[in-house]
Length: 258
Image 1 (cartoon, helix red, strand yellow):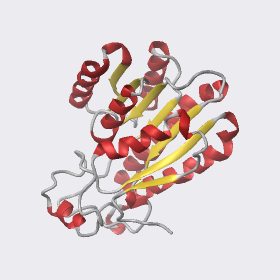
Image 2 (cartoon, helix red, strand yellow):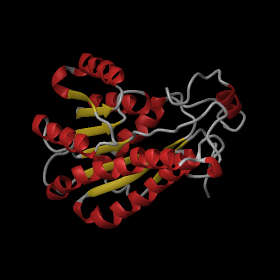
Image 3 (tube, helix red, strand yellow):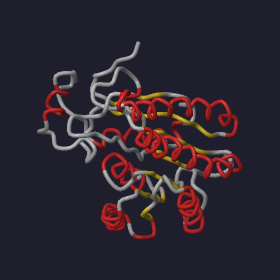
Image 4 (cartoon, helix red, strand yellow):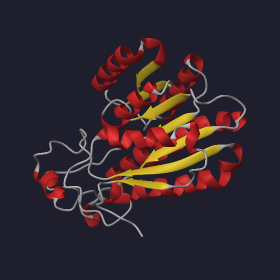
């Protein structure tokens, strides 16, 4: 490591609600400067105000960016570099999981439009963000890339649809490629795979889907976003330098790989 990276610049995609926002607070508390984005203007404004109130306006930045728009991604990372410097930490958390009133469609009924949209946001967007940060990480000899996967990408899905499952499983493959290509330059790449976590994406704990999930989770509760954020914050730290290519499950025991 060519410099002290205990206080770094972090970018969190989908960082304005749920796991992403909890991670932003964690990293700010650790002393990092944090830039977040999502595609929802209201959540960006609310998150920006909350982060600035918690740690001061000079430590955080929140912007509206749609991962379907490569130019918007490029412009965002250029702004971050101008304001804070090149990021040493990238947390790819943004994701969409379309569902109809009866849940996700069967693969035979899955539209090409939905398939392409989910992979564009969940997978291609993550790859484009990696392209935006890896050259500077390589030059510095230090970097942390953390993908937020899913229990659905680790085992037989019960709730998620084909496009979401495929996109989250593919993040693990992308992470392995980064390990192969960038580990010699001090860059680590890991995946955190949450189970059923109480976020805006999962809805109220009182829904039938969430109540049913309790019967499958040995811990007999749903997870809290901050529990996932704590794992991400460790992987983003200097102390996690020898953790590389891991998939860390945060699911209360619902899935326990051998």
